[in-house]
Length: 158
Image (cartoon, rainbow, N blue to C red; front, side, top):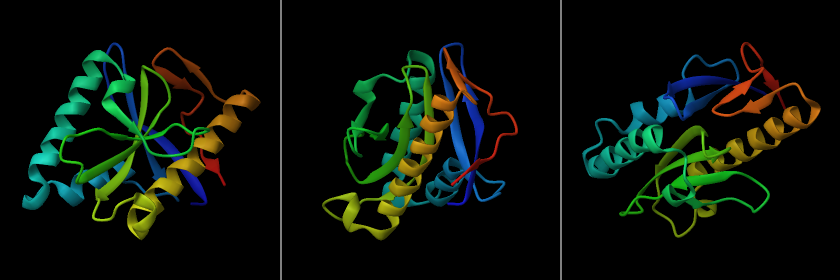
C-alpha cells in the first residue's frame, strides 16, 4: 500500500460504514470482497450471514460482541464473528459508531498468519490503522460521533 482513500459504503443514523481504496483504485476493498464471494456456493451461508450482520450493525451499532479481535492489542483490527468460522471479513472497529470494512477470504489455515492472502489483508488494514491514528494525532482528521471528519478527498500516504 502506497496510498489509501476512505469512502463511505453505508450510513445510518447511528453508524457509518467505510471502506478503503488502495493505490488509486476505484473499487473499495469491501467491494472486492463482495464481488469475490457473491456467487461462491461453498461459502454462500457465511456470505449471507456477514451481510446480515453488517445490516444489524448499521441498526444497532458497531458493538464489540459482533467481532473477534484478530490483530495486536495496539490496533483496531477485528473480524466479523460468524458461527462457521470459514469466511472472514477483516475490519477496523474505530468506535461503537464507525466501522471500516476491509477485504477477506476463506480461512483454510489455523491462523490468518499462515495464509498469504489473509495476512496480506490484515497487514494492509493494520498499516492503514496506524496511518489513521497518526492523522488523528496530528489533527488532520477528527472522529465526531459516527463520522470521520477531514477525509473528503484526503489521500493517506504510506
